[in-house]
Length: 247
Ligand SMILES: C[S@@+](CC[C@H](N)C(=O)[O-])C[C@H]1O[C@@H](n2cnc3c(N)ncnc32)[C@H](O)[C@@H]1O
Image 1 (cartoon, rainbow, N blue to C red):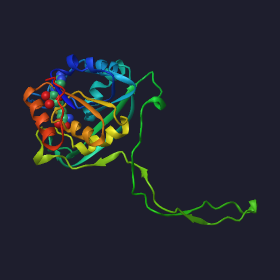
Image 2: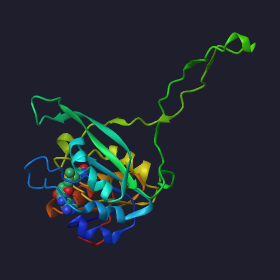
Image 3: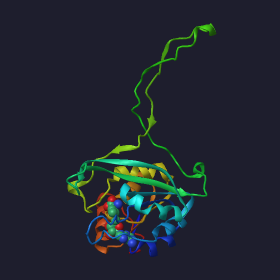
Image 4: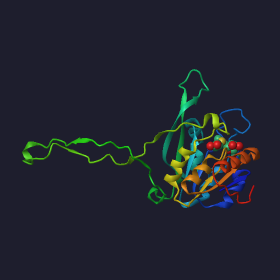
């Protein structure tokens, strides 16, 4: 569990291969000092993926549309997206819907078949037992069938792509901090146990916490030295933390 201080483009490629890369880059949507778009990281991330590895990127639809060519140029193909629904939102515009969601989009190398990408699709244990009505057979088949059957238990069901998790709000140490519970879902889905997660734009270190909880190895990178220190302290507070000496 290590957080490196520096520019991910310079620092992270040397630590490849990553089983999963998480990236929550600055969106360039505000005038805040840290919110500057970073160029050129996508091809580096693509090259740093393990053969079965994939990349989850956070961002707004606006920013994905603006950068769609860059993903294609880096040889990355879109796999799927999830919507993170939060309890409160950011109202940049008074004349638009209050935005209470963010997107995370998964990409994988275009030349790799999807079936070769590590994918442990998550389930929730909340399917409900139900009565299923069979379709009526046409009478001329002469076959008499039960009209319905009851599924014995609800069992697990595939996790849905809209995921509600409260954001860190008052406890957050970073203005765009993601809840570690949400990151844990993505990590369990896309990185094998014991695998290495690269968190190229670390911020608060929320992904480090999620890796510790889910038994994955973690390497974060944060360009802001003060934020990197706070992220290390945050993780150390809740969980055992081994800083591999790099800083
Ligand atoms: C959107 S925030 C990430 C928030 C993080 N996901 C969390 O849950 O706290 C982006 C972070 O990337 C950092 N950053 C910006 N450019 C970077 C670069 N070239 N390399 C590494 N980190 C960078 C910023 O300082 C900022 O903390």
